[in-house]
Image (cartoon, rainbow, N blue to C red; front, side, top):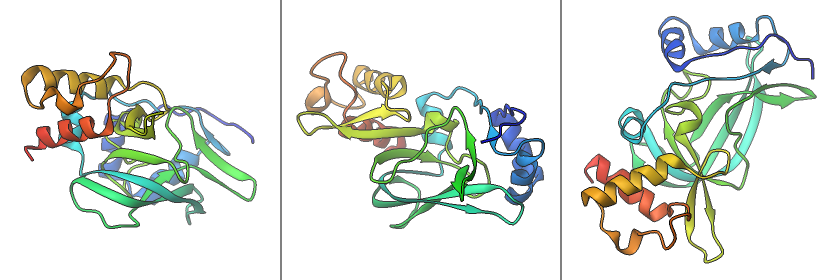
Length: 211
């Protein structure tokens, strides 16, 4: 894979680009000066309240497929389809498709370093904004993507988009417990180092939404 000039894109810049350019034209510009690779993406830090407040949709779902395709302007995008959707905010239907920049077709590809990649069969909790309009349609970029995995007891737990500990989830739960927004039982962590359970994180989100 031939690598060209790196591109650093802040979320504020993305908002300005979004207001002036179509998705197709932005993808064409993203390809200008490079053959296959955007080296890195940078996003402004987001706290939990901003994730919830700025998201157009929040849901838990399993990736059914991740299908790359090439747009007329030349950019490669991947359509990520979700099933088993549990909706927390907004409106989405079963089989909802998120379009992200990057993918590979016939040995030719584009990748964006610094953002999580979606794996078919894996489960995610996502905070979506600007789907079809921005290159990575999640609030705060990687900050709006969480992996969900079962531990040895079968309890679903929340990790960041790369599979590591999620400070956002842990801090949100701690603040909600301290303020009494959610009760300790049954959501209290048995050990401080344990990742936040999915049930607890959903309870915090619903509390923030006033549900």
